[in-house]
Image (cartoon, rainbow, N blue to C red; front, side, top):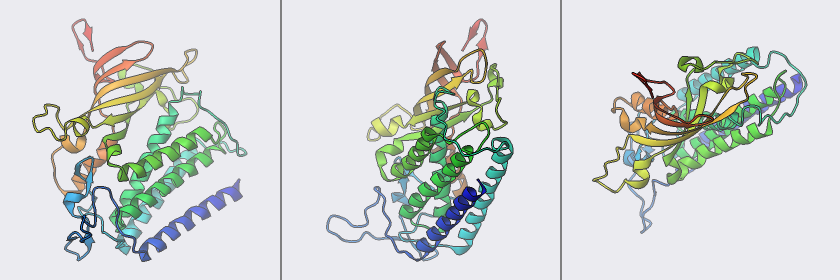
Length: 350
């Protein structure tokens, strides 16, 4: 077990080193479907040059779901890699600390009892509720890594590609660690969901129509809305399936009303479909699936613009699903005006 972990860590470090060296010296052109570097007559489009003298994507061309996309420092990506060594060192340090913190936390909680490496398919344990979770985590791990690469000065094409692979490497590391856990095992379906989530992030960045379908996650302790919060196998909140749900949020305005100036559907209002579960580890009850049809908020459109970091932060908030009017379809179908919380007025509860 120690030898395998050593090999995995060495591979991870070598991968990061290759990425850094290759990206520092390569001059790969920028590629994004929202931006064409040459027009129909093959004339180069005038590039945007920032104050630091770097040719970058014009702000009006750096879009996601037909809305301006933001970076942490307020810049747009360079047309070719222009690595800032200090930013790269800072981002690498942050990621390394984050990876180490997650490793220590999971080691103390989920991997405390070590055993030999096992492959265990666990799909039925939670009525498949953990699969959307792995898809989401693969997706957001790729996003976090990509944003770091962008901040360090990678081109958009390189940042999204390396972000996808680094996010998947992180999720694979956790899944392999589960393979040695006393109560766990390496789950092939979990790993497939990790891969699909990371790949979806990459293709979403380069396929405009996919940008209208955003993965979202909600975690509110089930005890807050009157249901038991049960975690029997460890203390990791990520395994508290009764308290979490996952969604695909659909940008209705952008899909159906983008060219209609008189459309009454607000830009900040999305429609979401979701999945969750209840009664996991709540014997003698059996896990029960939950399906959600809900309204949702497009935080980029809902919240006001501000400084560069704020604009990036509200963009990142779009990975979270906030309470909203929801129809839950399960063993009991119910409507909640601010799901999962209930509002009682007289004898009415909604």
